[in-house]
Image (tube, rainbow, N blue to C red):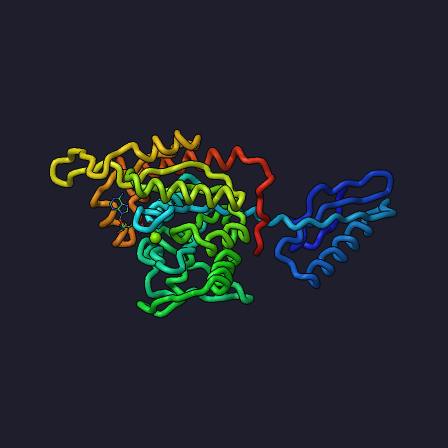
Length: 324
Ligand SMILES: Nc1ncnc2c1ncn2[C@@H]1O[C@H](COP(=O)(O)OP(=O)(O)O)[C@@H](O)[C@H]1O
Ligand SMILES: [Mg+2]
């Protein structure tokens, strides 16, 4: 069927058919407001009705919004490398071609501005939605750390904390299909509310090899279970110390504890990141090591690959429609 479609509309029209006098088409109205929808539907109807032989017109409208999923990175306690893992996972996933955004939900101790090199910058807003900052390599990132004055202590109470996080997650994430969320450490009510409200598709737990950290990790796993969020697996951080001088590997905190704990709990083990001074140095400089070359970057890439595979194998059950 040849129909003279308005040029602005043509790329949005698919499944154009004419059968027994009825012209039908699908019109993509993603991003249109109500007025634009009505106007473009009318224009399409007029164009179709003008085709010789058409007696009836049917237009189906679809809004093909990106499906956005949340990946939570959690830990039972602070200082185990949760933020480091979240930042580097986001970078590694983006490197593997995923459309990723990074949310720093650790509103009590935000560290993504430093890790992603966005310190001192303030996000702008458009249509009452925040526009993420471009972090390292252009990766979109939002953190409470960019919204508060430097060095000011934050004493959010539960509901305020949840609302603040809601604004970060409902920001204008563009075409990002996955939001990596750096959760606050611990297993309190704030964390539970966050999980229940924002329904991550899955969670990654990070722990050091030490017994105490592992007990805390087990609590975090329990929290995710309580919130109905599947745990994708465990990552062991600071496992094995790589001597910056001779490259020898030693195990100040032991190694393999998290893998054993994961096996005990029937959880997949996603990988191990060594205690390596270059990770700390590059992280502090705002250049995530996952963006570089070598064994550390490879380690993050391998963990990202396992998570990506898990995400790809998910059914649509936990999909969260992207809100633009
Ligand atoms: N594998 C590692 N090797 C060396 N330093 C690390 C490693 N992982 C994290 N760190 C450092 O340890 C500190 C705590 O890490 P961070 O990611 O902020 O922990 P959390 O978010 O769990 O509190 C940071 O200074 C970070 O640079
Ligand atoms: Mg942190």
